[in-house]
Length: 258
Length: 269
Image (cartoon, rainbow over all chains, first blue to last red; front, side, top):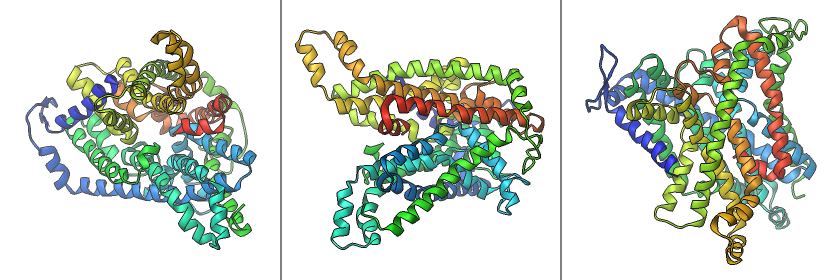
């Protein structure tokens, strides 16, 4: 408990404090002078605004795509498949979750490569933002499927039958019975897809061409630029976005199912 | 079943498509590991196993695997102890700020890895003045591993309730004896699932690692990442990737054996 409390929260607090410091332009040492310069740069320099917007939009796109892809497979697994097929499908979905993150991003590098399989079919968008969105959607898809599946599993079959018996069409049943159960599950899944996308910089490096995300800025300022305070300031953006998101999500009750 | 035949057909088709989407890229990596062409010409002009033997001989990859296993083992061990203790404390005792603490536990998984990484690196460097190295790496990994162990442990504890422990206490067993012969055996499979997931997470982790490992320490993901963009290393990297895909079947098989389908779903979350 203490470990998490002190180490993790302490680190986050320290991160925020560091973001208010500045770096000595010549020696590259951190000077403990309190100021808001890092945040001013962040808000006034166009590049950072563009990158922030790009990152958030990517996260939204990835979340929506994952929700759309996860829905049919989760529903099929939970409500249509026979118990045997269900087991097999769970394994089929879990396999990529256990496979290495890097390997999966790398796999898409191969898919999108010029002269690769997608290019062969004339379907490859090449390395860029589209490739990044596809790769990230792929990476986080199981995080969306599993909560949806778990949510739908808990929905009794009798409810669906009752809905049909009472004369509801498939569409109505979907909207009035399935969707209300699905929504909190999708929100729980979206916490992962959203958050993981916000912080990602490796998939972008691998398939994103020259595009940058917030994670790249943090990484570059920290390791290459040796500017820890600025990196810290950039890193507070995803924290603020996530806290706002978690706050909004709290009402749906999705946090309880995490 | 309550869905019409048409709906089921559409769902099946979509499920099939999603499964293709999930598995084709991985299959491509495995296939390419046998590709004669150094640049993964498509379709492969021929098949060979020479890259696999080259990968086995690669000292860099071998060392990186050893480092990764060490880090994952130590981090998992720490997480097992602390995560279980945290779960017991939160489940058994009511104390001030209990709800805050449960939110706190979600944070490390709800916040992006890059934030965790830089926050920890910053804490080590500026607050504690520790050089980045093996110690900071293990501590960082343990931090997010605790969460997975905790989640598994608390889910099990909630389901168990406290009756059996109370019975044990009533029969005269002390706190430690009760924990050892009652609580622990009942939690065993949940803890194993949590440990398995922790190990996998740590073994695979790259973002927090790049921030907290410092120079000179190469875990397997770091090694892959560093060699990813080197054309002459490409076939070897690809073999390592293919091997990892094949190996990832082991934890799934284990967790299925361990706890049945439902628990492995819970564990993966």
